[in-house]
Image (cartoon, rainbow, N blue to C red; front, side, top):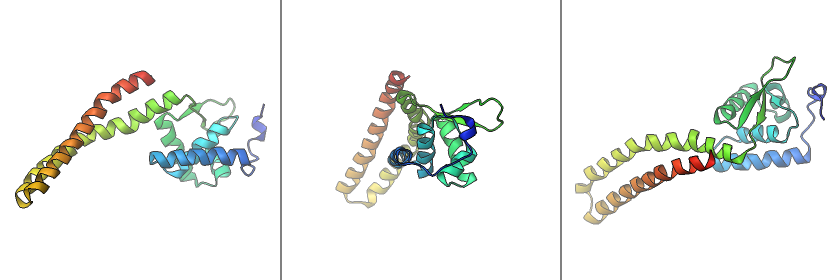
Amino acid sequence: MVSTADREDWAVLDECERGVIELFVSVADVLGFPRSLGEIYGLAYISPLPIHLAEVCGRLSLSKGSASQGLRTLRDLGALKPVYVPGDRRDYFEPEIKIRVLLYQLLSERLRPHLDRSAGALEELDESARRCSPALAPETAKFRRERVELLGAWRKRVSTVLPIVQRILK
């Protein structure tokens, strides 16, 4: 067991730590998150003890602002959970490691709000396509209207399937 006395010795990341962190950096990139979120989650994932802000800054060479914002974002997404460490006033975090919980949170926090906002945007696109139709060649106008309608159908399908997927993950 690693003791809390070892915490202030922030050694250079070893090969295993670097590999795990790089893996989560790749995942963050695919999901459109900043690199720092992947780095912080990777460090938390491979750390045997909960992590704190100073450790994140020291081990990952991140600024205090970037590390603080990253910890807050990951906590808000449910990827990091706050934990109590007796005798220490700092905020500590450990990773959520259940994939179903992470996917559920990702869908709830990122995809659901985007889908909700897109309804109005699609209505505006539909109106715009109809307003532009008289100025375009009939084939082009028809093509654009069909593509905007297809976007609406995609949104509707995802909105229908999302609650089912969320129930399965919960």
